[in-house]
Amino acid sequence: MLPRSRTMPSRIHHGVVEERHDIKHYLQVEVQPKAQNESEATNTPPDYSKCFDDDGRLKRTGTFWTATSHIITAVIGSGVLSLAWAIAQLGWVAGPTVLVLFAYVNLYTSNLLAECYRSGDLVTGQRNYTYMEAVKAHLGGWKVKLCGWIQYLNLFGVAIGYTIAASVSMMAIKRSNCFHKSGGKDPCHMSSNGYMISFGIAEVIFSQIPNFSHIGWLSIAAAIMSFTYSSVALGLGIGKVAEHERFDGSLLGISIGTVTHAGTVTGMQKIWRTLQALGAIAFAYSYSVILIEIQDTVKSPPAEYTTMKKATLFSITVTTVFYLLCGCFGYAAFGDLSPGNLLTGFGFYNPYWLLDIANLAIVIHLVGAYQVFCQPLFAFVEKWCAQKWPNCNFVTAEYEIPTPFGGAYELNLFRLVWRTIFVALTTLIAMLMPFFNEVVGFLGAMGFWPLTVYFPIDMYISHKKVGRGTSRWLALQIISVACFFVTVAAAVGSIAGVVLDLKTYKPFKTSY
Image (cartoon, rainbow, N blue to C red; front, top):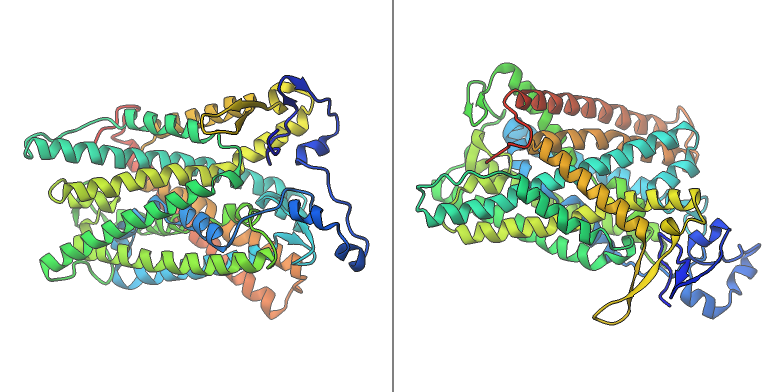
């Protein structure tokens, strides 16, 4: 018999039904009795602690490096390719400055959030397994439901955004080869629908991975891919700057009257594009929504929050350096005409094979990133259904299926059906609204203030009992209010961009 899944109880093995009416079985293993005093805690049976953590769950095995790979996979996503465009809207002064400010805010609030993984004591307090559980433990009330709606809608939106981004990269590979074979005579226009469906099929398969603790290998592969395509984009940007022997761009960003692929930039469009750029940068750093879930995979000692803070500092430092290099050299190469997806700006000429490698790396990365972001949503729905119908075999039963490589896969019918429906729905919506930059900007705006700033700050204030009116309380509130206005501005800019795109849009007939 295999170890029980973290997301589903195994109620059926080899056709034998185990009658379980207590929902505690959902929590995978019997809970270890809580120690009444310090001496009792130190006298825990040694063989028990080798297998289980202090909450009775199987021993966590995550390390600094696995946490770092999860963060990098989540952070360095398709958003990095839109940074040159974002800096082009803001200019040489505001662009890099805003990028560094967003990095600092994310680092600061992520450290606050890491201390909220446990309620009470940072080392021995009760664990919160998800972002929503942390909000419930520290804040409670209506904020829990609000957090749940925002978090899971954001994750749902990220899945749509990644489907769009993956299809753009797959089409870029096909078009570059088509363009190369025809010698530039064939424009090679094609529809994105087939590529979105292909990505969806791949995600249906990978979505059957039971839970977060089983995707470490996929996350590491995705992190490697993110550095691959980022490095290619950076190298090509540097090459283009060296070829021109000058830096394009201006101090204040794109000029009014500039003729772009979308038409001539007006004064009002300049404002919308500037606000949309804020959302694109916010999206490029969005990972706080899954920080608690990542931290729940980390082993201790040392304390989980210590490892998480180190992983966060290292990851955000590395990604910020990459972001600055890719965004700035991309802007230097293309100036006001910087494309929404940096790799598409280099055209289909040589070295076309290098662009193909970069775009393939993007697709592989997005396959992993999709899972990193969606696993918390999968777990939430499956846990809720298991609690709602604990005796329903369709929801809770798991069947062992032998695999060719030895061992067995635990098939859960509800997981198979519901995750397949989820992927199909995100794919369908992506086909309906394939606006890459606008979707990226709106998702960044929707998740930035509530999930990255507001809830972490409020939870920290509650956890540390920061007194109202104190200097620290005022400083935290100033950060929260400032970020709220940034979120509103970015959301308005992105919605305005979608409205403009809808004027020339036909459902399911988008081609490139």
